Length: 72
Image 1 (cartoon, rainbow, N blue to C red):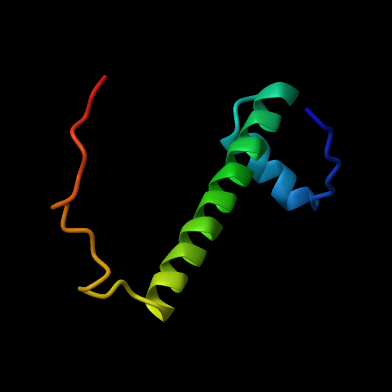
Image 2: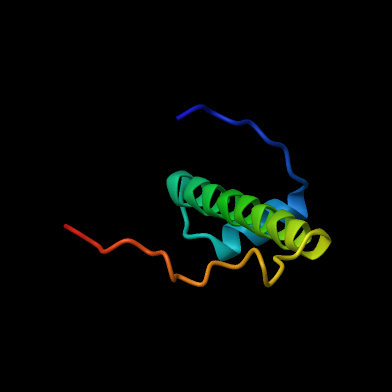
């Protein structure tokens, strides 16, 4: 993993320490999870926006009539 140094104000740090489990590692994991969540939300938002701008048409929809048999 690569280190990331961020600065937060005293109020934010106090709130983070209250919410995240005590200790440096737990606080770091909390921040990592929050970043992952924000990235996922941004990706989902971009995907929703792309579908809103260019929705699937009925003619483009896959009707599964040509689906291949599954062979494990």
